[in-house]
Each structure stands twice: as C-alpha cells, then as structure tokens.
Image (tube, rainbow, N blue to C red; front, side):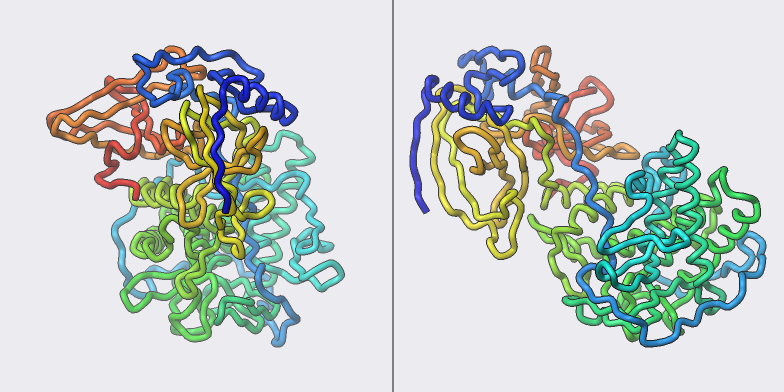
Length: 585
C-alpha cells in the first residue's frame, strides 16, 4: 500500500481537465461543466454545503438520470449439468378433453397455512403488471445460441453447447412465450406482431402436448437428468418438476386468453390449461409429483426445486415469487379465492423469511437451504420485491425493496455520469476488482493503494460505476482524467454522484413521518441547473405526516419525494424521517 498527498491549484486542475478531455468528460474546476454551461462560484458566507457550490448541490441533470436495466432472466439450468433422461416421461397420450371454465379446479386448499391477509391490486397500470417489463426483443425472436435454439415447431430448446441435443425446458419456454406476449401487446408492425403471437402459441402448445396428468392437475415435466454443481440435493432423474414452471405456466395461459389474436377454441383450451396448472398448486406433497408444501412453522412454500422427500427442497426465493405472479394473473382474470389464498400464503412466507434472504450490506442469498450470496440474483430480488409491493399495495415489500437496493445497488451508470467534489481534501482508493470495476470473489475489493488529493475549488470527474465495496460503503469509480480507475466514497455533500438514480415508484403512496420535538429537518427542491432550487428547514412540535410516491438516490443520498401539502415537490433525506413507521436500515 502506498499513500501520497497532492494539492491541486487551479492551474493544475486545468491541466488535468485537458488530459481527460479525450474521454469526453474531464475533471473540472470552479464548478464548470465540460461541454455545458458555467456554474457560478459559491459565496462562502452563505454557502451551507461545506465547499460545494449550491448550484451543484441542488442541481439534478436529467441527461444522465435513469434506472439500471434489468438483468437477463435467470437461466434455471446454469451452474449444472444436463444429460440424457434415464427414465421414460409419462406424457399424456391424448388431447385434453374439453372442460368448462374452472370446472375441474379444486374448491378447497390442500392444507391450512399461515396467512397475513394480503390482498391483490388487480387494477394495476398496464406497465406494472407481471411480465410487462420483460419483452422479447425482435432480434431474439429466433434464438440460436450456445445454450438455446428453436426446433422445427418454433419451440425453444436448451442444450449444453453447440451440437449437443436439445430438450424442452418449461421455464425457458414459458418466459420466452410471455416475452413474446408482452411484445405482441405493443408491436405496431403487423408481420412482427403475428410472429410474436405465433411464437407464444408454439410454447403453450408444447407445454400442453407434453403435459403429465396427475390428481386432476397438469404438470410440465423436465425431460432430462440434471445435477447442480454447488446446490446439494438438486440431483434429478427425469422427469422432474418445478413450482416455478407451474406458476409461470398459469401466467402464460391466462395472458394468452386475453389477446385478440387467439380463436375462441384456443382461448377455451388456454383457460383449461391455466385451471389445470393452478390445480397443481392445490395438490400437496402427500403424493408425486408435488411442488407445494408447508414447513414445520406452517408457512407455504412453492418449491422451484422440490426435494427427494416430501417437504424438502431448495426454498428458492426468486422461483417462488415468479410462480406467485401466475396466481396474480389467475386471480385478476377470474377472482378465484383459492388463488388469492395461495398468493396471501406466499406473500406471508416472503415477508416472514425476508431476514434470511437478506445479507446486510452485501449480495442477498439465493435460497434458504444453501444460503449462498449470489450477485447475479440480487438485482432480481430487488425487482421481484418491488412487484410484490405493487401487486399487494403493502408497504412491507416496498421496505424490502429499499433495503435490498441500499444493501447492494445496481452498479450501472449511464455515459455522462459525473461525481461532484467539494473544495477540500478527498481520499481516493485503488482497489483489487475485475477489469471493469466489478466485484471479484477471489479479490474481495482489497485495497491496493490510497492517496489524498486537495482541490482548491469544487471539481467534477466522470464516473462509470457506483457500487458497494466489500466491507465498506458506496463508492464511485472515476473513469477519465488523472484519477482514472481510482475510487472515492459517497459522502454528501462533499463527494456525490450528480443526478437521480435507482428510482422506486410506490403504488399506493407511502407515508413519511417528520419527527416531533421541533427537530429541524431540511427539505430540498432540485432543478436541472440549480437555479430556482431551494432548501427549506421545517420543524414540528408533534410528529407530522406527508405522502410520498417515490424513492431515489438523489445527488448521492436516498431521498423521498413529497407529493402533497405545502412541501409538494420537495425531497427529504431518508435519514431525516421514518416511512410507514420504519427506517431503511
């Protein structure tokens, strides 16, 4: 480890700006935006931001704002080995006999389980409904990769590599079909729209044609042997089954019934398939196959990977929530009270076991059985709990979303993101990471070098990553100029990422509570360039409430936007208030 100190006067800063100009954005001095308008220097007698110009502290440039893109949908067979089936698959031999809507759906639950009374909001805006955030892109309409391809019937197959045999994989097929449905809903080109629907129908047909019937339910088998390399117990001989597939299939069939491009006969068949898939979630673990059970404490589990013995499995969080989306779709379409009861039980389980999913200030755990922190699933957990909040309207899941976002936020930044530095001394770090700045398990973000730099005036630098550093806080990686590759800690108001990031909209709105006892709290109105921005200091003798419709990282701080009353449009720091009676910790 080495440490150096450098004091940069204005002439040195100008030289640094010239060095970084080739990268498009450079460290800049005196509050001047490279390629933008100048910002006036602060008045030290009236400036409350400890060396940071008011015009920087209260400006939120819109050009770089935005949320991180969703990660690719998880590959259910990654991390394992696919091999030829060692047993025959007992597919149903005949076409399904026609049934009326809901005719064969059970009328009782398979067993009693814990329920907290969660209700479902069925009037969600279109863009917040399940799977609307996962369209199949046109360039992916005919996949042909090392892991996936289309067979002659237009059905997705999975394989272990080019030239290897392909197999049906229900979750992959269902998710591809749901993505095609989402794209069908918004596509304006008639030919593309028709192909999206054709692809979705092909996936549904394969599931129906190769179903396994048991106890009045339809199960969608995995026709290959599979062993996971690190998750002991995930060692299957074909056919095996997944609660994730059973729940997601409900979404596929129900959503197909809602499209104008299906015939009446197809619509009836898809509804029958949805009923039969729901029935599989109403059959317990007292016979095989099974995908649901309750644990010793009475909590319902939909097992993505059921174990060899009844009541066992991986207790995988993401797979269960994806399955619950099928229950939302079914209830929203039919009003079936058993679907609501199952969803209530699943939501109760997720709320109860959230402390076991969470890994404080780090990546969350993939499943309850193995408790392996899994970076690739953490962002999925954030998105899934956000959707649980929208679907139930419960602040419980909004709180979980906020906590997970703070534990390990998405490191993604748009081009043009900049960090503002106040005048004064800052500590920079060189860390042992992947080449792109990502976390490496073998390197653990070890500190390689540290230096202190002093800026005579407020300064900016471009950044390409904002992430939690192992066993530390949130840091930014500088991406151009003299300090390319160095990291600086997020500390308001002395060093912060300019803009609004990682926004979570709340539906319904939540309730902020300002403290009583005349404790002073600052609230902020931000503008594009800092002009006409303002700060107010408020205090209340007794605790006082205000509604909020969103949370975001604004200029390096978790903040809530107030939506009613005298403070409408102002933002307040999460550390200054409570929300729905809790703090985000």
